Amino acid sequence: MTSATSDMMENLSNTILNNDDLPMVKAGAPAYLLMIDSLISKDPKNKTLLSTAAILYTAYADLFVKDMDRSKKMAQKALNYANQAICLEKKDACGLKSKTFEEFEKIISKMQKENVPALFAMGNAWSGWIMANKNDFNAIADMAHIELIMQKVIELDNAYKDGAAYLYLGTLATLLPPGLGGKPELGKQYFDKAVNLSKGKNLMAKVVFAKLYARMIFDRKLHDQFLKEVIAADPHVPGYTLVNTWAQIQAMELINSADDYF
Figure 1 (cartoon, rainbow, N blue to C red):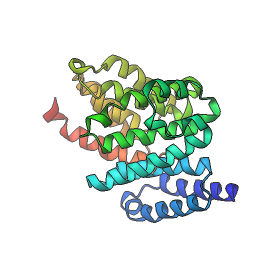
Figure 2: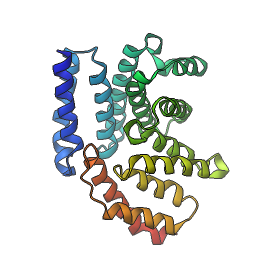
Figure 3: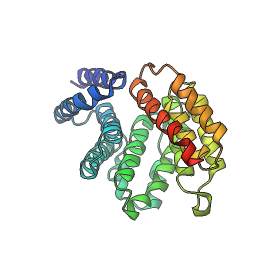
């Protein structure tokens, strides 16, 4: 059951991630997500299934769900799946989100390379949950946990998902202006790593680089350079087609609003 379910899940995931028709994915993905829920109910201890479900729920909520209440529900489901996956990886990680920060640090420090997929899924889902609850100060305070998780992912396997952990760290470093604790130059280092490790496959790396770093320091030249590269690129890359198609839409919106911003 476990192997067959995992194979089916991989096929479902690839079908979504390799599609460039955003309206079709938006309309059809809920059926896939319900199927995923069904697969998990039949195979609740499948770590790969749980981690992948967490990532897909997070991605769908981030890209397509604008209603705040629905977004919160989907983000919570993604986080629940990620929690279950990491609990199966490490028993002391059960209920990870409710641990004190000291307990959390100790648990994360014990993670090994084989735990990276579940660890990354946890950080990804937790980040999505924070964004869905961004009006809650207590949720925003959880960002330190995401930073620690992604730093551990990098320590164990810095090229995992083509350096995606660096993209999260760059985002965390540039969410706030310098006067409020933002660290643009540290963010730039992380974004550079994300762009280099993705080797052009993940176009979202350059979009976020432009949006959060180039705009923060008012570097119009860098901003437009990255966005024009994204718009000119072929979005059809295995595992990234959906994200890249969305990245190109965002890049065009940022280019069109650049005169007003700068």
